[in-house]
Amino acid sequence: MTMLSKRIERLSESETLAMAQKSRELKAKGYDVINLSLGEPDFFTPDYIKEAAKKGIDDNYTFYTPVNGYPDLREAICKKLQRDNNLDFTPDQIVVSTGAKQAIANSVLCLTDPGDEVIVPTPYWVSYRDIVEMAEARPVFVKAGIENDFKITADQLEKSITPKTKLFIFSSPCNPTGSVYSRQELEALAEVFARNPHVYIISDEIYELINFSGKHESIAQFEKIRSRVILVNGVSKGFCMTGWRLGYLAADKEIAKACSKLQGQFTSGAAGISQRAALKAMETDPAETKPMLEKFRQRRDMVLEMLEDIPGMKTNLPHGAFYIFPDISAYLGKSDGENLIAKSKDLCMYILKSVHVAVVPGDAFGDPNCIRISYATSEELLKEAVSRIKKALEHLT
Image (cartoon, rainbow, N blue to C red; front, top):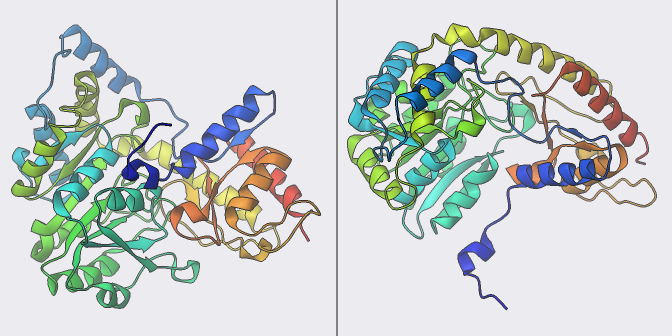
């Protein structure tokens, strides 16, 4: 018997990837499965970015890359942050990684020690909790319900901070809820952090370009806490480049240097061809992504309208990303005569097996009363999927 480490035994499998795998297995058996579980745009990478990658191959960007990224890419990221966010960073404050997930893991591992507390607003992206626990820190969950648009208040934040608190991690626009913090809401949180100089902030802004509320707001804009903010972003969502695996962080020089040091022992630098493609993305006017944004808005509105016709399904209006996170607690405790729905995971499995639609249980995001529906697929498939879900729920009493 293989004796695996306690670390890997404690680590949870990603529920989003697990549901995607289950849907693939059913598809392989010939079932007509509609997969609404993955957070991946259904658009292709723009041609001008592909051309930049092809040129990178022709120009022989095929050798080991600098651990923290090519200098011209880091310079382009700085220009992007100034152009789009009015934030001043220098290239030595940027670390390019193999996806935003690695940038988050680098930051957590560089900033926390065993026993440190990390505040995680709930619902949260699935990997936050496991990354924190892998670092042997302790996640402290602060619940934000659907009645508050899944956003915590400054008062909740203040009450959750202790002398052991080292880090706060959140996303806006948010995965899984689609909620977006306004400037006023971020400013209120920043005031709390200003009074607690021992707390660092990871701001996951990977969905920056999928924002229906207007201008994206970053908590890094508040000068009094800027040096303690680690801004994480990338090209996967806004530029449809999930498979290119390219993210980055912008932080205080000392933090950036530490993250680069850590990355040097794990993966070294991100792939050179991906970096050439990302350079083109950074140089792109964000207005180029507006057609995709409008398509997502149309899908969101359509799915919300359909969900409102399902009795007991409670929704809010998500202002970003491409998810809806409905409260399904009205169905907990119900049964179709064979399957008892005790938690959201049971409901997701029931929907998958009975009508072959894959969605993700809210348990994975810290809220067992909800499920996550991704609308990053065609309107035709979304209409069919929600119709199937409605049909399945009608059999629960």
